[in-house]
Image 1: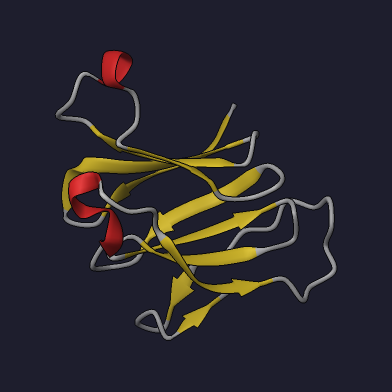
Image 2: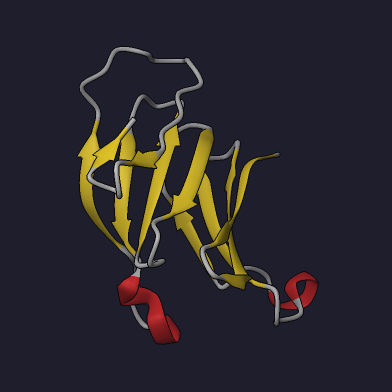
Length: 113
């Protein structure tokens, strides 16, 4: 089950999905998605992904999941399909295990709510 679906900023060819199985996928609509699948499949979280979104310049991905963690991923490393994204920061100090947490960049991406 897909729980989150967001298009990249200023580029309608790419979008990100977050699913119940903890996976995040980046898709390229210019490909044959039913045949080729996602451009990137990432085992991002241990539980259901509630939210995944690109930052404004599409170089980072913010994910939030039911495992009580938020993660910021550097997705610049995946251009050309050669490397896995790098986790820049993990936030897991809140106590909402089992709840559907979400997150969003705000304040010109200086903050996460």
